[in-house]
Amino acid sequence: MTSIDVRDLTKEYGGRRAVDGLTFSVRPGRVTGFLGPNGAGKSTTFRLLLGLDRPTTGTATIGGDTYTRLREPLRRVGALLDARAAHGSRTARGHLLALAASNRIPARRVDTVLEETGLAAVARRRVRTYSLGMRQRLGIAAALLGDPEVVLLDEPANGLDPEGIVWIRTLLRRLADEGRTVLVSSHLMGETAVFADHLLILGRGRLLADTPVRDFIHARVRPGVRIRTTDPAALADLLARHGHDASREEDGAWAVRHASAEDLGRLMSEAGVPVLELSPQEATLEEAYLDLTASETEFTAPRQEA
Image (cartoon, rainbow, N blue to C red; front, side):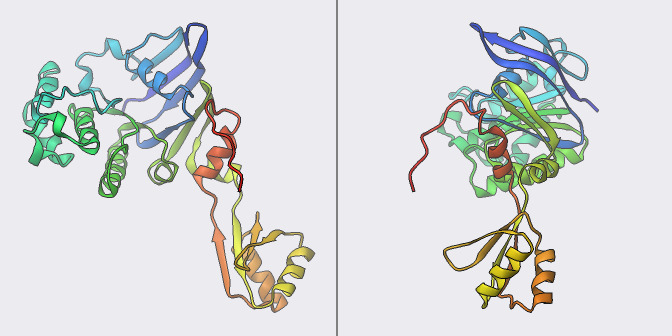
């Protein structure tokens, strides 16, 4: 199947580098999450991949070719960059039929993607009457129209309701399982942790991480354990004697950092310390991401006082 390959990619606007020497590959058969703070260069990278901008230096290819050299590109690459792209006076079906005709895609495929994206019942309504979530679905329908090997989606869950978010999660997983190359930009860390297998993270136009999701989380943020007991003095003494980094929380529970529930459970059992709660506190993608990008954020609000 087809891969995306970016090599030494740089894009400058008026002396400012929006993309700075990027090199990475996006492989088939997995969902790759594309993350980074606002202004990190994600949208510019998408535009360079899709031939909407020309690189200052370097290359961005899909299956070995630049997008502009692809014949009938919708059959090779499906993309969602802006849910407002469809003209408001057209119907959803009319919009998709025009796209299909431009790439010699059979008209029956239009009805297939309308069904797949849940828009069949409103396919003859004007796009201007659509909600943001419906426009998102239409943009995804357009991306899937040519049954492409490569799918690029920029914030596909934007405007979707909970059912829609579950639907897009399932769709991404299916596309990857079919062997397609899937690259998804998102600000929703919790969702990205669910649907993504691999991560590319940008900061100020540079590549900060190219790694499997679980490896990234565990390398940046170590998990902890929450403990409650009827004998807090004995627990405090036990944790101190074994060198654990622990603190008491407002509800009386103890938060033990960089520890496993299994190890602490064994210690408490051997010491005879009663256990009311022993809960592993898993590290999250959001924590790991914020740890990595803290110095790479271009726009930040002042810290709020507690």
